[in-house]
Length: 416
Figure 1 (cartoon, rainbow, N blue to C red):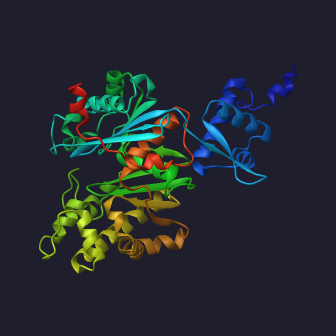
Figure 2: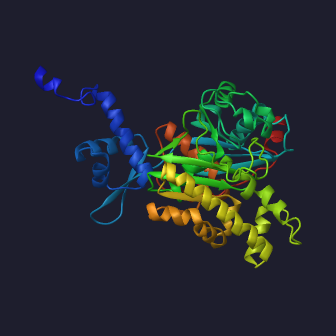
Figure 3: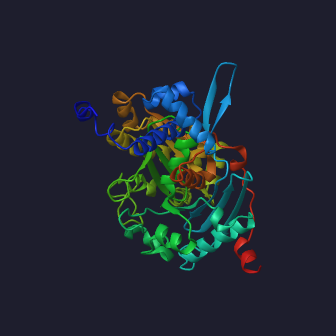
């Protein structure tokens, strides 16, 4: 051995071959998740690996059923991630309902269920989620051993150190107070479990398959019953030191504004969430029952509804500009019911004084509507489990986007 040559190698080069190969495989997988279907030449350029190494990795991924090579013309082929045999259950725990879907890539089927309950109920915790997971999987013809994993999207921030809902948000979901969500469910189910804030998982879905695809730095903001945000930076969800990064809904815009449930005054949530927009319309003679009704009426020309959407956009623009000056995402996507307002909302975001100021220093930043609709958090759970299992899907199959709802899945399971 030439010890002089070995001493000159970097620590990265001196790693055992198996470790180095795993790292190279991960680099190829990350590029395929970020860029979608790619040629082997493009993979070599993006990863810095040799073409021979990329060729060997692609062959291994094909043999494992993780990737396929698709011919696109007589001279070029594209490598794409495919999940040929995984089955995943994604659950979304909201303040007033539980949604769940099982995605079975072996049979290419999706099955959904939704369970409404009273807000603040203390009977809708771990037992309901675990029963729903098992009943939905059984209804899909799957045993626990066939599930690659379970993802749980919580309508609440999760503290990184404990895996529990942050103390200031526990009143929103009292049944989950001080419960280490992922660990408790994994022990109960005997299946790997990922638990995260719903906006974080929605951000991951939009980055993987939607409005954030191709953006190394991406912010997703969900505006509906509440307001949540999720950052994807260099291809990974950014959670910060305590796991609470991205909580843009609790950015204080007006120190003397309305009191928020978090205890602060004038949070973004108090200006753009469904509850507060409905309150703003109460004395206008144009009151509505939901945010979707406000958007629909505004599209028909209702001046009061157009006004509250315009003001919501201005508040969002201010929050986005302040966030962008700190984190500098290249794309900010708005999802949830508020995003359905389209130009009514985005024109007012762009009209914000703060956004005009931001454009002077960051002219390339884009504000766009999210693309994946109401399923975004569930799809983010799917993306998270597949990534954790070393798999993925470069192009979202149509069947994944088509819910097939089963009612009363838990009662059916108990009565078998």
